[in-house]
Amino acid sequence: METKTDGGSAAVSSEELAAIEDEEVLNKMLDNAGDFDERRMIRTALRDLMKKKRDKREKERGSRQQDLRQQGLGKGATTGSAVSTGRASMNQQASTNKPTGQSSPSASTPFNRTAGSPTSPAAASVQKCPAAAVPNAKNVKQMLLDWCRAKTEPYEGVKIQNFSSSWKDGIAFCALVHRFFPDAFEYSILNPNKPRDNFQLAFNTAERLAGCPPLLDPDDLVRMKEPDWKCVYTYIQEFYRCLVEKGLVKTKKRL
Image 1: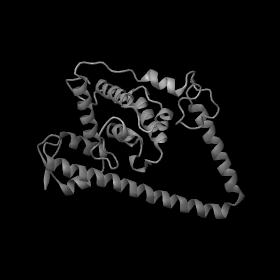
Image 2: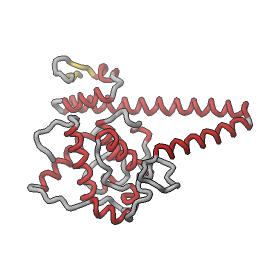
Image 3: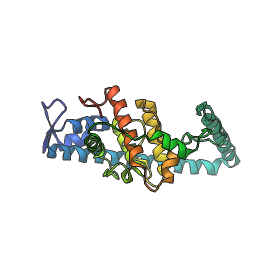
Image 4: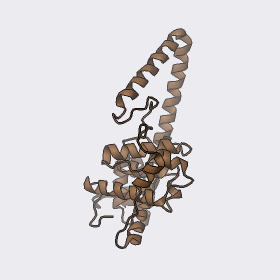
């Protein structure tokens, strides 16, 4: 079976699709695909590529761990000293990279963005999620939900049905951001059982690469049984607008 390339002028077979090792190329082809069979072939190639990268990464990790074990047997006490030095270096780097507005000494990872906030997370959440009053809001909401589904369609573990429960483990946020910035992080190693890390990764990447302000607080989200749909909808709407401003999404309608 064959499909069309971006320009639509040349046929591409399933074997040629399998030989493509650039997720961005496959994503663009999926966006430009005209019929169901073409999209199905490209989605299959994209999933196979992500699995191939995941398997390669796991193999490399196993090889590194084996090398480290072998080195540890020969170095003895020297290894302990090296580990301590490495930890000190990591702590120093985390302290250097911490935003100036955060004064809490416990913020040792990039996932803590709310330390030192003068208001409680609950109050901040209320302030950040104003009710949206726009004409024909129901249709706009459905259009944005359909857009999210289309962009995350190739990603395993993501099934967007609404703006609440579908986003509670953070994986959907990561998939949506990864679709536009595939080199920013390795999607295949994300863990749905670590929602706070997933939220923080997605929001940090969206802020850094798309200029999208972090309207949601990971700590607030993990405390909820399900995210407030108005908060998620507001954030996704802002992310969409940032992509439009950067020319990553071309549309005549603003959501």
